Amino acid sequence: MDENSIWKLQSDWYSPTRLHNSPVEYDFPGDRFIPNRSLMDLDQAHSLLTTTSQKPSKLKFKVEYRRKLENNLKLDVEGRPFQMLVFRGSPKSSRKSNRLIDEMRRSDEEILTHKPYRHFPKRESCILDAPNIENDFYLNIMDWGKTNFLAIALGSKLYLWNADNREIELLSAVGYDYPTSVAWSEDAKTVAAGYRCSKIHLWDAETLKLVRRLTGHQKRVGSVAWNGQILTSGSSDKAIINHDVRTSNSLVCRMKVHTEEVCGLKWSNTGNRLASGGNDNLIYIWDARKMSAMQYVYRLSDHRAAVKALAWCPYNCDVLASGGGTNDGTLKIWNIQKGACINSIDTKAQICGLQWNKHHQELLSGHGFGSECQNQLCLWRYPSMCKIGESMNHTSRVLHLSQSPDGLTVVSAGADETLRFWDVFGPPQDANSRISHLDSLLSLKTSPIR
Image 1 (cartoon, rainbow, N blue to C red):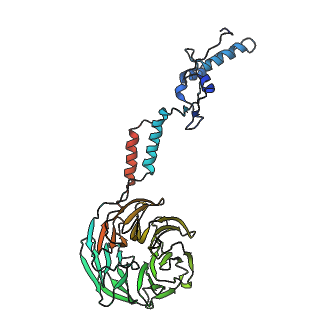
Image 2: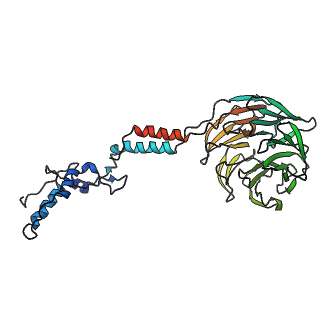
Image 3: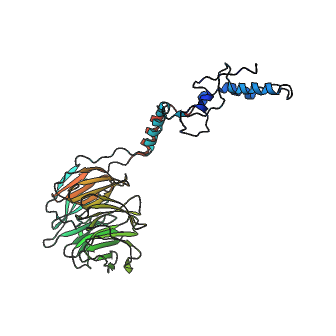
């Protein structure tokens, strides 16, 4: 080969000179040390690495050998410029070749992480009349038990509605008094009812007979909540009482820290914490082991109105949701481990009830007086707290919310004297169907890895 002959590199797509000298800015979306195989002659590279040849003499052929070696590494068999390993990205101004691969990757990620489209149903699955229901924000007169019976107080009467066969049983009727709070025991064998005249009755759900009377309050019992064999009650006398229903002297402890009526009580799913809300705009968090000493864990004072709506998150025991009354209207999410509010949404309406979705990360709120969400049911996505949808079918404020045992249906009780059943939480998502759906989509795509 003539030493004076010089290869004139063409400024084409294969040219290493263009790769180094071009002002075009290149984008390396992946590992920059993985070569671009489309620019390699792998057959020639393999041949050069495996073919044995006689080493040239160091003295006589040193210069000539080096030149031939460089030519073999830079030129292909037809004499065109080429590099054995070429690291090249696509120009940022023209990423058409990578766009399809990027879209494929994004769609795969969405299949794995994106939840299916959720919405609020347009219509109720069932509507029942609820005549004489008390239009009182501070009461808690509806609860759905684990045996699929709905307990609800309508005026002075307490009813059990069988959700399986839709039969109704009259549990009690008191002419001079009326129930102000209702709660099923955890085993769904007993219904506890607090009354306006300060007493508490325990009813056997199977025999429909009164089995126990509990005392201790001086005024109406607006909230009751079970924790195993412990029944906790809150009253307008500002006191919270724990009753052990297994003993003859049921009163275990009495706490009086609220300065107004106790209108909300909720035990956590683990049974070790109690949240109490009052008409003093406060929430107290209690440790079950320290309640006898009247030692609360946290005093939460961010609300500006009565706190009746309380709900513990079913998949994070450290998260509590709360809703404020008319002069507040905020839906707040609390980290109870730290005693801090981690999110607050102004719904601009009284919040009367809250229910968590057990199958999807969602929260349902029921609203009363207000502006934007007045008389509505609103479904929120957790933890972003973006609104998914709402219903305006109630013509008066939504007073109470309760959830079916399977966690699929929510019933709302309104001041319009109706009970409306909503299949709002939908069936739980089948993980196997998601995987099979992913497999079917991947089978239709060409893998970018060769």
